[in-house]
Amino acid sequence: MTPRPTPAPVPSRTALALPAVLVLLAALAACSPGSDTETPPASSPAATDAAPSTTSTPAPAPTGEPLVLLAVGDSLTTGFASCATVVGCQAVSWAVGTDPEVDSIGTRLGGAGYAVTTVEAAVEGARMAEGVELVDAAFAEPGAPGAADVDVVTVLLGANDVCEDSPASMTTAADYGVALGALLDHVASIAPDAGVVVASIPHVTSVWDVASGDPEAAQVWGTGLCSTVLGGDAAARAAADERLTELQAVAVATCAEHPGCRTDDGAVAAVPVTTAWLSTFDHFHPSVLGQAALAEAVWPAVESALPAGTAG
Image 1 (cartoon, rainbow, N blue to C red):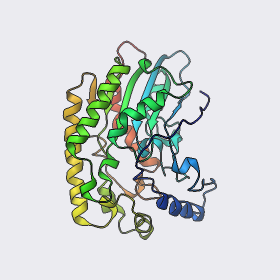
Image 2 (cartoon, one colour):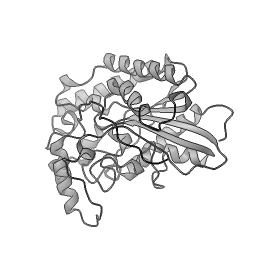
Image 3 (spheres, helix red, strand yellow):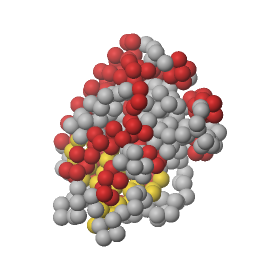
Image 4 (tube, rainbow, N blue to C red):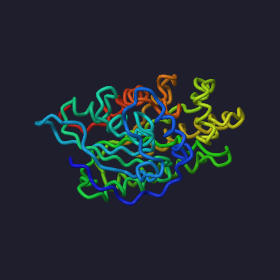
């Protein structure tokens, strides 16, 4: 499909894409050896006003059954800092990417014989409370498929609900559950036949354990990136870890109340965080290997959500 015009940005608090972080990452990218990709300045719309986009991926099997995949998410789904850029890099997105190293959900569906169209309803910094708005914005784009045609939905939101300036600002489990319930109800109303997969939240507090000794990581984190996890406060990290556990539990309970919804049984949360898993730009978002790990973790649940009677 031909790239489409970008709509007005969805309002969001971009905790994982702070302007100060972008400025520092841009400087680091300019100094990184072996990088020949031009990095957009932090003031560019692509760097500061990311918005959902609708694209097609990958090259489908010509005779395959049509399948529409809707990916709802945040910077993990847009590929923020996952390749040689400090903004979104959709090609390496775990959900809709085309890079063979990632073997994204879209790529796997294409390989299974489906003619895949993907709809990316994701923006850097998004929280669960913005899920409905993200979905509506994505389908409002010119040329987007009809929402009723959606077959499979993936939801990966929650890191930004924990990544805050202080533990007191984190999303409560109750509010998270209400927001997820509203998103699932909305999806059911516009795409009643879709199977929905709610992925668990990556264990972001492990990032501190594996990378806090890296001076370059400390330099980037010092700009205020995900302060509850990366700010150096052990009590704040413990609170973030506890909140992650609460959010995971309420996601499972909320999904169970909605027909057609399933979780990944904690597969994403269980992915071991290593330095190779982390972006070389901010040492927090996934690298290409990290994106591949996310796709691998979510894929079994997506397989179970595929519509009956279609090619696979």
